[in-house]
Image (cartoon, rainbow, N blue to C red; front, side, top):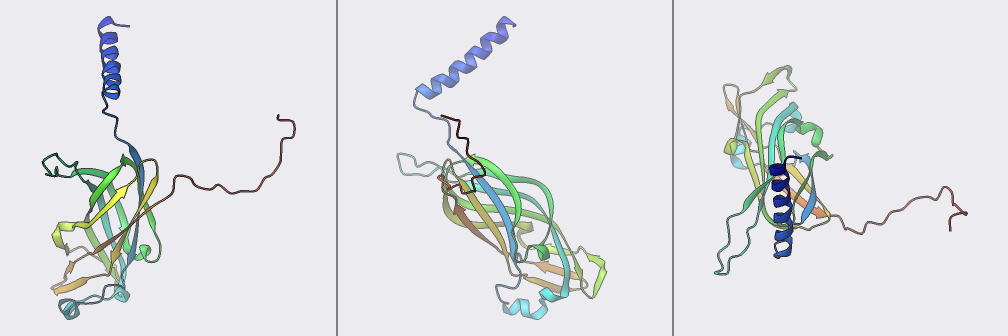
Length: 217
């Protein structure tokens, strides 16, 4: 082995041991699984929506591309009492098409990620490229759909992700909130709801005994 390379490796290992002995433990990790569902009938209609609202029964398909899901992690509290700005933890990044009609009454697995345990204050979701087909004209794809906030949705809620356990985050699209503005243009105001649950670490395993090895002491 190259003597210089060996020295660098030894120095790196020494730094890790030094951090452990100095009372600065590595961040504790937790597993997070993100699911998505939709309840397009919920939420009711506001006065504005009643003027040009599109009903769920009028839609053949409504597809949107999910590009990112992230969490805002709460910072540590300084001795002076000032809180550090939250850090962003990404739990999904990519481009997956989601058919909202198919999410009604079911939950679709989006991602599973290892993240630092701790307190989180916000869930962020980014979507783009919504397209729709109507029952009245299923062969025509409508792409002129404007999403509010440029497709950046969030849920503000303080919750804890405990170490060594699996947390489930269910993101639920609430109501359709799709309005036709005229000339074939639409405005979509998606609303998001989140449910967070934690599975206990001591999960009870159940099953049926097929055979017993009587020779094992």
